Amino acid sequence: MEFKKMDEIQKRILMEVAGLHTVPEGAFNIRSDGELAGRSSSANIEIVSKEDGSGIDIHIKPGTKNESVHIPVIMSKSGLHDVVYNDFYVGEDCDVVIVAGCGISNCGAGDSEHDGIHRFYVGKNSKVQYVEKHYGEGDGTGKRILNPVTEVYLEEGSYVEMEMVQIKGVDSTDRSTVAKVAKDASLVVKERLMTHGEQYAASAYLVDLDGDGSSADIVSRSVARDKSYQKLDLRINGNAACSGHTECDSIIMDEGRILAVPQLEANCTDSALIHEAAIGKIAGEQLIKLMTLGLTEQEAEEQIVNGFLK
Amino acid sequence: MLELKNITFDVQEGAQEIGIIRDVSFTIPDNKFVVITGPNGGGKSTLARLIAGIEKPTGGQILLDGEDITQKSITERARMGISYAMQQPVRFKGIQVLDLLRLASGKGIKVTVAEACQYLSRVGLCAKDYIMREVNSSLSGGELKRIEIATVLARGTKLSVFDEPEAGIDLWSFQNLIQVFEQMRDSIKDSSILIISHQERILEIADEIIVVADGKIDRQGPRDEILPSLIGTTSAVGACVPMGGRPVPVPPVPTDANGNPIPKSRMKGGEA
Image (tube, rainbow over all chains, first blue to last red):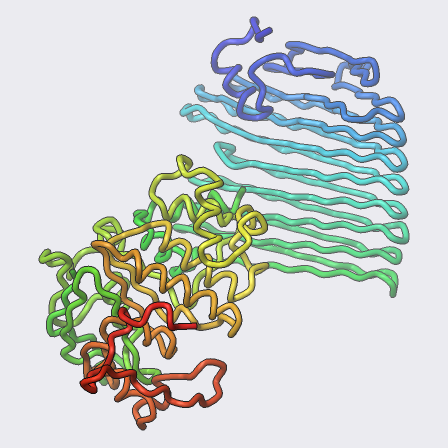
C-alpha cells in the first residue's frame, strides 16, 4: 500500500527522513503540515493523541521485542510553525527501534519551523535504538528551521543508542539533548552534522551519569562548509562510579566555522570521564592519495566527507 | 615507458635555493622492474612524487609513452596509467577498505566483495577480517601499508611506483611481501614497476638498479652489474639494509662455466 493522500514532494521527504515509500510495518504516526496523515497502533505499541492536542504519547508494553515505531514529520507548506510533543513510554525488558525525523520542503517566502520535543522514559533492562534524520529542501527565500529537544531517562540496566543525522538543507537548528542515566544503564549517541551556505547549527548535550556502572559515549562528527557556523557543546556530569566519553570531530571547509565546547564535571572520585575534540581541514595527503587513484580534487573531497559522515 | 629528462627540483629555504634533485635523467622501459636505491635524504622519494605529479619539477621533462606529462595534474597522470603507493599511507575516518579498493579499481560498486578480497589476499591479509574495516587508526602501520599496496594492485596500471614498500612492515610479513613483488615481476606484461627500496631482497629481483645520492644519479645499470658493486661497499651503508638489520654474508655472484654472471631468470627453482 502506498500513501495515497500525499503528493510527490511529501513522499520524497518521507523517503529522505524515514526511508519509507510504503506504509511501514508495525506502529507509525505520520504528521504532515501540522496534521495527522496516518496512524497505526500495534498489539504492543499504542499511539494516542495527547488530550490537549499538543502531540502524541507512545506506549510500548513491557517485554515488546523486535518491533519498530515510525513517527516522521513532513512540512511542505511555507510559513508554518509547528510545535509537537512526543512522549515515549518504553516498558521493562523491551527491544525496539524508533525512527523519527523531520523533512521540510520550503519553496515559499515564509519561514517553516518544526520544533519537536521528544521525551523517552526507558524502563529497566530495555534496549532502544533511536534514529532521527533531519532534511530540508526547496529554493524559496523562507528559512527551514528545526529546533529539536530530546530528553532521555534511562532506568536501571537499560540501553539507548541514538543516531542523529542532519546532512542537508536545514538553515537553522538549535538542538538540545538531555539525558539522565541510572545504575548500569548506557547511552550511546552518534551525531552526524553537515552545514553549508550560511546555515547555523547548535547542538548541546547534557548527560547526567547518576548511577554506579552507568556510561555514556557521545560522538559527534560534523562538517561545516561555505560560510556556515556550528556550535557543539557536549557536557557529561559524572555523579557516580561511571564512565563517560565525548568526542567532537570536525572538518571545516571553505569559510566554515566551528566552536567546540567539551565539558566534563566529575562529582564522584570514581567517575572516569574523557573528552576529545579536534577541528581541522581535510588533510592534503588524503586528497593526494585519492587523486593518485584517478579522482579529481572535488571527487576526492566528496569521498572523504561522505566517509567521515557515514 | 617513462622517461625523465634533465629533471631538477629546487626548494626555497629562506633566501636560499636548495637543489633536491639535480639534473636527473633515466628511462623505465616497458616490461621492466626497476629499483631506485641510495642513502636516506638523497632524493628518492622526491623522484617518486615528481613522477606521480604531487610535486612539479623546477626544470626538465617527464614523458609517458612519449607524451609530455610534466604539466599534468596528479589526477590526469593517474588516469593515464600511473599508480603510486605512498611511503606513509594516509588514514581515512569512515572509509572502508572495500571503498578504497573500489575507488582504486575505477569500477566502483561493480567490483564485488569477492574481487576486492582477492587483492587483499595477494598482499597477505586475511580478506574477510579486513574488507569492511575502516582505513583509520585502528589499523597498524604494517596493515595500512599492505592495503596501500593492494590499492595499486587493484588499479593494474601500466606504471606502478612504490615508495619504500618495506618501511613499517615486520620481518616476517616482509618475506611474504617479497612474493607479491615477485609475482608482479612475473606477470609484468606490458607494464613496468618502479620501486624505491633499501632491501636487498627487492634489489635481487630488479632488472635494473638506479643509485641516487645527493639528488643525482650515482650509477645505473642492470642488476648484475650494480648489485655486486653495492653490497659490501661504503656506498652500500645506508643504501642496502640486510634483512633483519643484521649483517649477512655476501652471496657470491653465481657464474657460468665462462665466469659470466648467471641472470636470475635462469636460476629458477634453486631459490628458497
